[in-house]
Image 1: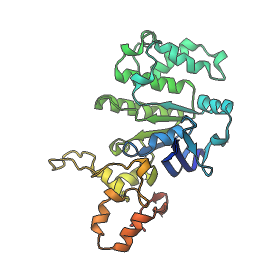
Image 2 (image 1 turned 45 degrees about the vertical axis):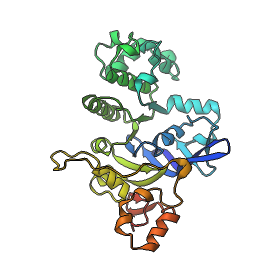
Image 3 (image 1 turned 60 degrees about the vertical axis):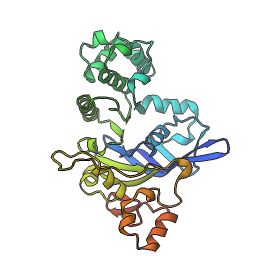
Image 4 (image 1 turned 180 degrees about the horizontal axis):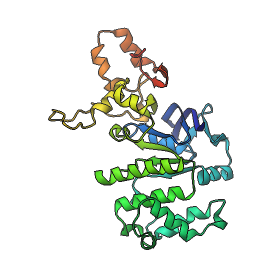
Length: 330
C-alpha cells in the first residue's frame, strides 16, 4: 500500500520576471514502513522536493505546475485549504531538518518545544504530557531524560540536539518522517548512531521514512529503495541493492566512485568534474551533459551527442523496478 504518491511534480520559483525551475517532472511513491533515500549533490532539488510534500515552500515565489500531484494517504496536498494542510503537517508528515542547533528555539527548554507538538495531537487531552516527553526522549536514546528535558538547546551536544529533533518529529505520531541530511555537521560515530536510531524507529513503529542525503555510502544499510536526483530531475531509481551493485546512470556511477573504499589502492579520491548547473542555466537537453563521462567515450557519434545536447532523456524502465533517464541506455 502506498502511503505517498508523487506524480509529475514540477516546482519553479518566480522572482521578478525570471522563472527558476527547481524540480521538474519528479514522480515516486512511498510504501508503509519503507525507507526511501533521495540522493544527489547540493542543489539537485532534494530538499525542494521534500518541502513540497506538505507545501512548506512560500507561495509565491514557489509555484507548482498544474500537472503536479501529491497524495498523502489519498489526500491531494496541492488542493487542500490551509486548515486541512495544517492537519496533514500535524498528523501525517514530520520533518527532521538540517542543523539542529539552528532548528531548535534557543530561548525555550527542550520539554516546552516537544510539548508544543504533543498539544497539537487529536488525543492531547488524554495524554500525560510530561510522561510522554520522557518516553520520547528515552526512545531516542537520551540518558537521564527527566534532567535533560529541562535543558536549553545550547546545553546539549550536536548529537543530543539531533535526537531531540527526532523526538519532536515523533511527538505528533506521523505516518511519514522526512529526515533532511540528519547527520550534517556530526562526527562519523554520532552519524552512525543517528542512522541506527532512525532505522530502529522504523522497525518499531512501522513508519515510512524519506532520507535525504548526498552520500550514497550511507544508504546501503539504511534504504529499501533509492532515487538519485540531478539538477531537478530524477535520473535513476531502483532498490538500494540494485543501485549499489548495479548502477546504470553515469551520474550514479560517479557518485559511487566518489565514495571512499576501505583498502582501495588510490592516493586520491575520485571526483566529478564541474558543478551542478544553476536553475537559471539548465541545459536544453540532458542536464548532466557537461559532466558526463559517456560524452568522451562516444564523441565520434555526432547524432547521439546532439541528442544529448538538445533533448531531455525519457524516464524509462530498464528492467522491472529499475528506472533511468539517459539517451545511452536502452
